[in-house]
Length: 356
Image (cartoon, rainbow, N blue to C red; front, side, top):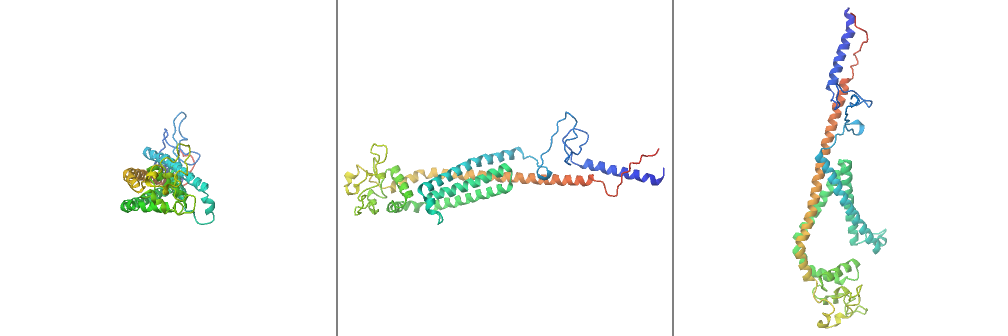
């Protein structure tokens, strides 16, 4: 055989050796069999499995990139974040609906439309419910869709809530003494503006009914109100609100609004048979002392729950980032294998049969 005729065969042997080495360098398939083969999509899969064999096809993300599943622990964290934020979303939406209902009933939305925001406590419920539901929804979608951007937004919002709550708690602890000393002054201001604000009127009535008291220091504090003052020309002169009465319902189904009429004009012995004479300042201070630990425990539980949510979200973000890095590395390995698998431009495979 001549030397010029052996060169195509040498090129064929060299190309065959390079092709074999490139095939061996590719990631092996999970399918049983001698060698993996390429499926119709151009990715190395399980189409080479013999009949009856169990084939496992790896998960693939967008663009054919491999998307390995999360570990068991990270999957549990994912669904725990999703379920807990579903609950918080429902609570936030319920708070939002309550606030909107309160604004609609009192007509604050219509009066404030096109102007400044209404100064209504229900507006606080609306804003709080909207914030909680939006943050919880971001946590739900971020965990369910495995979206690191939404999870980072959720973590930032929870961290902002924690900082705000820490500042409010520090201010309350630092100003606890002055707040208690100003209780009677606050009650007197509420008595003066009793008829001007329906929310303030409702709150003061609930305090007097719940603590069984009347006024700030005594029932005579209602003389500071322009409508209940004895010098007032109105029909409520020398009267007290129904929440000051010992039996406001008078054994009936509804509260009798006229049970305190004319009580301020009576002497002390006659008045104590109808209304409570003690002011709400000392009972309210005692109630705050007795429930301070319960309120503090509730706030601690809220902070702990938010802290746990923040830690779980951080752990899930870390797991998603690690999975993304693994997917990028796998894609780089596949691309390198595809480059090794392709024949070089100068190599020509000859189909000429060998001579004996």
